[in-house]
Length: 112
Length: 109
Image (cartoon, rainbow over all chains, first blue to last red; front, side):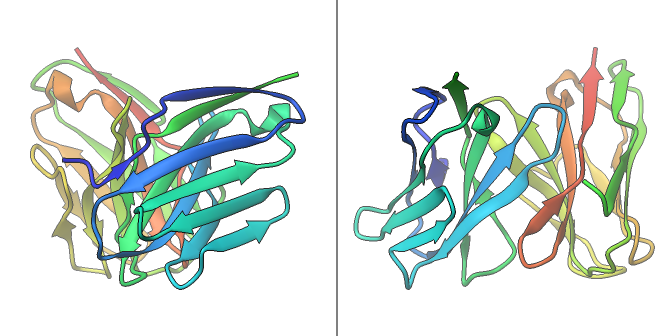
């Protein structure tokens, strides 16, 4: 059973609007969460992370929110740009370690 | 993705053939990983190596072998390829977060 799930395989958003990507996890031992972004024919690249001691982390247009009680995190992109069109993977680890469990990914399309 | 180089980038095999995917890093990090990416499945860990000379199984190790002969290189071998091993393979190193190579697309017919 997948411990990290991204239930939306795809998301389409208009340029300038907010993109919200969601991720759910089941393992209560996870305490460090990351988002990776992947363009076609490239490897995933690290985007933003959050520790379980926080409920929000912001980096420019990207904000990650963590709701530990619901075992849910989300990535907000504001404003969305066409260059944000990519596949986004949510990932989690226990004890802030280097063994990551990934979700299935969400393909974001930002329309001009 | 400078720092992690994978070869080959593309490969087509017939069922039963063998091949080795090569990964080399120039960032002097201890931990190296092999993942596979399949649609809807995200990235799944095949094998990892915490340091030179050590290797451990990940989530989906069956059908694969690995070798970490030195700090710089970590190879993934398919001894007898199967169509289920058609995938995109990524090598990664741990730099505080995982840093991935550009990937190797493998098709097994």
